[in-house]
Image (cartoon, rainbow, N blue to C red; front, side):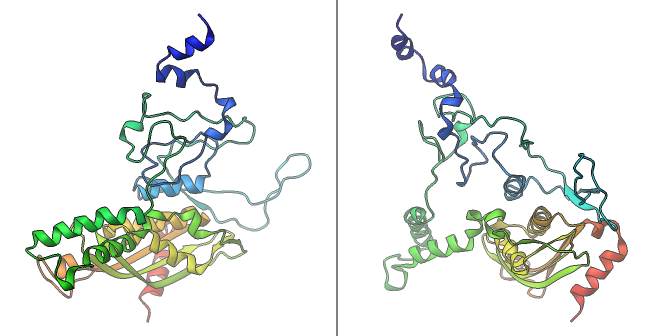
Amino acid sequence: MSFTRQLSEMSASELNDAIDDTNFPQAHILSRGRNNSVCSTSSTSGTSSLAAANDDVANGSAATGQSTVQATATGTTAAGGDEVAPSGPVRPRLILKSNSSIVENDGTQPITPMTPRTSTTPGRHENCTFHHDLELDHKPPTREALLPDMARSYRLLLGGLGENPDRQGLIKTPERAAKAMLYFTKGYDQNLEDVLNGAVFDEDHDEMVVVKDIEMFSMCEHHLVPFYGKVSIGYLPCNKILGLSKLARIVEIFSRRLQVQERLTKQIAVAVTQAVQPAGVAVVVEGVHMCMVMRGVQKINSKTVTSTMLGVFRDDPKTREEFLNLVNSK
């Protein structure tokens, strides 16, 4: 039987298994589209720990509320290969446990791209919303492409309320509402690595950094109504500091999604930890929930306060007290 005929009689899965990965280096493209955590073609060597941790945080799986402290040396390496001890005390860095299965390449292993699986082969593609057969990468629709379907849904909603969607005041309401909802949830299209944009700096500073009263607006995932408030963030650097505006941008990433305040608080703390590996992170969020104010129990003066303490902020009462005093001071 000729080689050509053998190929023609193979099933799609057999063809896929027969492909030599090394012949298709262009095939491995790490998708950054939405839902790529459901169906990924990434290898074990092409993803930074920052991006991997951020994906876990976005899916709510990296934050466990627990932390381990690991002492790390910041000294240099001598010519003979022996490490030179750093001068002065070294503050232990906060390392979060992660459920991620991604293994970092230490530089000694060759990088071998993985052959992308198609939807006709066994694997995880059956649950991937945006995957199409024979494509090398996930291609989710742009946010603008979602507007027509969302506008039609809002139009049906108006009709269900007994309104006339064609009256003058409501003619363009479905489109406006769709655009507004995309803006309210723009955090789904942002990730930590892009927002930081390299604004992590080496600095010999190990005293507490606090940015308080960061305005926050989010959407309650239970009723799709807003909740808003302020966020205060503190961290103890370990020779790395973060641009101050980036703390506010981290709040924007996770607040501009469908949220509950408890998860939002933890996601912010984990993101700061992943950004600069400090000795500890503390986050306090104070929010007013419209689902309690304008419906349900209708308690207009109620506020919800949540906190997440990691590293020394959890272990050292004096450090925690110092942060809380700074946050509560006028």
